[in-house]
Amino acid sequence: MTVTRTPHPTDTVSLVAPGRRRRSRTSSIFPRRLDWFYVPALVLFAVFSIYPLISGVSLSLTNWNGYSRSKAFIGFDNYLRLLDDEVFRTALVNTLIYGVGSTIIQQVLGLGLAVVLDRVVRGASLLRAVIYLPVMVSPVVLGTMYYLIFRYNNGALNDLRAVFGAEQVAWLSDATVGITVIVIVNSLQFVGISMVIYLAGLQGVPTEYYEAAQLDGATWWQSFRSITLPLLQPAFATSIVLNLIGGLKLFDVVQVLTGGGPGHSTHSVSTLIGETYFSNQAAGYSAAIGVVLFVLIVAATFVLNSLLSRKRVEL
Amino acid sequence: MKDVSTPAKGLIYAGLGFIALLQLLPFYFGLTTASKPKTDLTSPWVFPGEIHWANFQTAMQQGNILQAIGNSALVTLVSTVLVCVLGAFTAYPLARRITRGNQLVYACIISLIMIPPLSVLVPLYTLMKDLGGLNTHWGIIVLMVTGNLPLAVFLYTAFMRSLPVSIEEAATVDGAGPLQVLFRIVFPMLRPVTATVAILAGVGIWNEFALSTYFLRTDETRTIAPAVAGFFASQGSNPGAAAAASLVSVVPVLLAYLFLQRSFIKGMVAGSLK
Image 1 (cartoon, chains in turn cyan, yellow):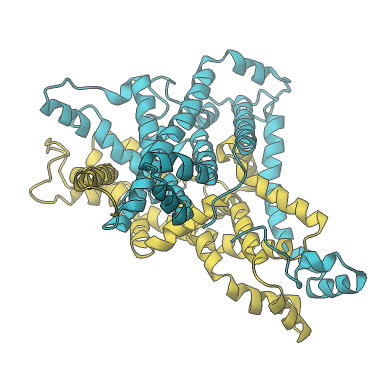
Image 2 (spheres, rainbow over the protein chains, first blue to last red):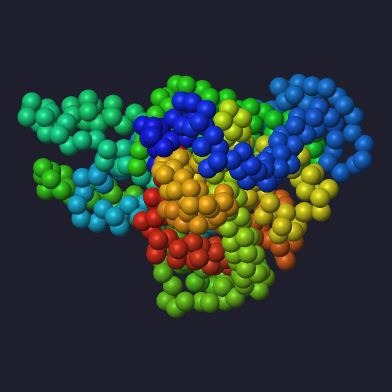
């Protein structure tokens, strides 16, 4: 599936251009009323995507509590409040850690796995399927199972430490450890995505390049560095964008593993939005955090897309 | 494995095996914990002598897990079908009538992919409340369709643009109307991309948690992810039952993955690459 391709004589694109006679022919095959087909979707988007975005911005300028009939316009007070809000700052920093941390782990591990799996002959498809498996499972389910590893009493990790005589650790009651655990769980769950993207990228590298390098006496590392890595550039772009955006939106794992606690120390921006709205009844304030999250994601997408090449891997 | 020495080979397999094991461990601990009674305080590393089914029973009865699976099946099925149908209909004019206006419409739809669901939680919740869609299946279906449609439109449009126009042209010359062309000619050719869209949307909707946890709060309507999370939170002292609920909830996805593994991975990659 490619978006760009060479124009074919019967293409709409080339038919529209040359002259009036041909244009009328196109419009008889694809008449204007075809456009009606996208109207239902546009209505859906207008009501459930665009309207909430706009109404979110306007709610963020009020002190609404989420249920009362009255709300007052307070200008940018909510946004000013965000600047001094310790809880929000923590959530924002955590979100960046979740995003960047997971992205780094997933690239290193995903690329390593892909390089190795690409050369393995026996058992490659089974290993790939197993490593990819958690991608299919709800983070909620995986979170409950990881809880069995990290909980204090009877946790698998503490039991393992006990065997070696190490002391028991309350993994999820400490902010730093909790954040680390969330990054690891999220990275391991979705490392399969990076892995298959890099595998697809590696399969696109012509073997002649390696053969030529080998004839010239290049070592494995040399050909990896000067052939594989540059040719994987589109795969890097795809995988990094995907992982970073996913990490910045992180909600499920945080909600299930720590619920944002202890205190508010492990919240992501997404989980903070839910808590601010439903537990603190600060709907206007929550809407303001939502606007910030939206801006953050849009900005991250644009920055990444301009930093990394826009080219993507072809399957 | 070509040109790799035997010890290196062993090292590679050991590393791969370790990661694969790491991915399976949570499921193993889920299994051992779910099959032990609450009073059994042996480590989750130890497999129980005999399987204790009471945890599964507790999950079914107190956690309403069966009901939640039914709800998820309904929501996932209806939403996925709607995403495929609406996606194909929406993409057709965007793929075939490349006018300036349609290019703008297309760009707008694609940019909706960026909206994080939680960023519009307050306005969306308020809107749903006003429409009477809270704690209803149609409400969550509408949200799931809206959320998954932009990517579907993207995939369908790209695929349709790669199909030759000549077949549709010939059908039109033979006197077929646009609807006939769409249903008889175009739709049958969309099978590969529909598989991708259905897998992406289906798995995503089955696993969806962020919105459904807030929009579905009654036992009668709750889907599987929020049901498992809620049950897990309420069973602090009984992780066995929570683990049992988790295990039961992955069975449908796991079965589908087992049988359609190749197209699952391919579909997910195709969706992510575009």
